[in-house]
Image (tube, each protein chain N blue to C red):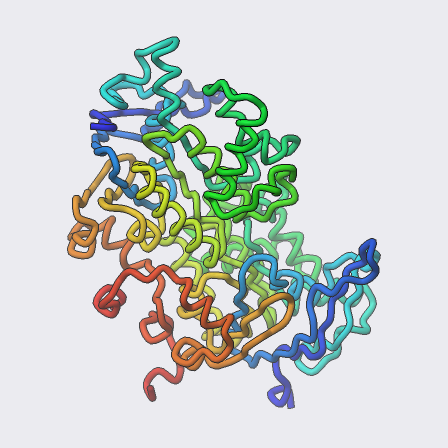
Length: 273
Length: 273
């Protein structure tokens, strides 16, 4: 039965923000769905509404300043009418989010182990000891060296790449159905970037997670995405299979984005194995 | 010779704790490089390789423990007074985070006007005209000069930082990850702009980045750093693809594909296509 549903189905999503001139639309009429084990890439330049869309999915926008309409279905379950408390249980447990800047996503005054155990124990009935074991095993799963000692470290003691892996480990420890990765590698250098993308890919294959991958970097998209939605001025202007999109972009804005890539390596395959 | 870095070694002191005395953490060891006028050198490496420290040493912000930095045949750390002031004029910098590189309480006019005020005795009217001209050079409008930093986007603010850097027609600009936090459209725009400025004003750049593609587009020659050392350098940027050094290979292999065809990700349907 469960397989009949898409992991995430979004239809008719509108976000308005209250301003002096009345309601200003930020995001208009967003439709997309993601199947289990597949990756939807959401691209567009900064300010086009990518992050607003994913905050709206998780209902992280302030209801006093914004209004969100539309339907969001997680494994067939409608989320839009849920109470705040129910939503809180879904966030982290069923939809997890990986944020752009790991340095500001952790509380600087607590060791990362605290954040880890707090997240696990909020959503499960595990004891502290069991939570600790789960934390260690999920950190091992993302190739972090010596997890037990890492848990006692503070965020500033780790590099950006390592901290991003810790964030991924926290997200994965609860085996969510959907992961929203909002620019997961933008703050990292190229070597760490590839490592994190490979990690996401492995989790997708092994656990059948659906990933909403938000990025402005077409390199990241071509590495990981199955399907791509292109956003401009708060609307999705084109949605297509990743190969289709790169080979035959239809919308002029998509063509412009593809054209904007730094093109320098002429005989490409040689360098990309 | 515009810039000569001779056998620079530098270390930061690691924090002393109650139990142990302070230790030296080496960041640069025996780094040498040269840059001719009108040339652009790309300095590549992963995070923590010492790229930014080298940039700071060249900018005169961090005195190296041993070694020499000669800018226009003068040692920055030995000259004082008006000679140093004159040297400073020819050396400018643009950093990654443009929001923290400008004073949020100054208008664009004041931000760009600051170096002019310091070095050139212009009347208010002349200065205003000059600022307007600079804004247009970087693709903004002269009317934008009354705006404050929070009214600009990241890409626009980066252009303001560039306008400020070129205000005095310097000889060398150190660009430390200047395009890394921008989206692709803006990145391409800024890279094109830098290329144009280089030709128009005969500027030289030291372009610090982890992004091979960006460095390749802008630079004439490249150098790769790893653990505080320049491990390989290329007078002709195309030679980087033939390098046999492991650090260079690592950077090259971490480069993201330009098309999904070349991706490394596991794909369930790969065997069919």
